[in-house]
Image 1 (cartoon, rainbow, N blue to C red):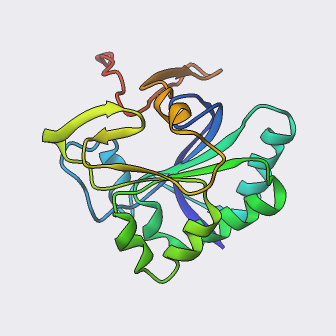
Image 2: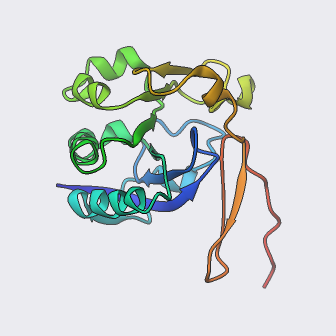
Length: 194
């Protein structure tokens, strides 16, 4: 089983409670106006086909080293790759059951529950942040980009206060100097000309 992955970040504090491994998938037909990740919308955009078991093994290695407390899957739209998303969640539960799993989706929970794999995925994850991003209702706090979005605590693993305490933005500078900006209220860094 494979996932179309736009990018990963081995350690993040702005994508859910604690330190998390983040996976951004490629492809989103919702294409909400004002979305922070428009480069993840095109299904054939900049992505890598990643083997789910290999990805789960990499994440479990980070967990075994004590580097992360959870995994966040965002996008793009994770539920537009339901088989891969379910396979990843199940592989993580087998390999690193102590990790929490959080998924961001532009679909409402009721929409997800009506899909072929929706209920199965929800049974494997701890937190769902759902709802389309609505630019005019922007709040950018508590993991919600806009006021209509809802944080669903699907298990008792996290308390609302933990979710609300998640930093709204972070800047990560990799060893190669690559800058990655993330979170629900990311900074708009000036680009160098050239």
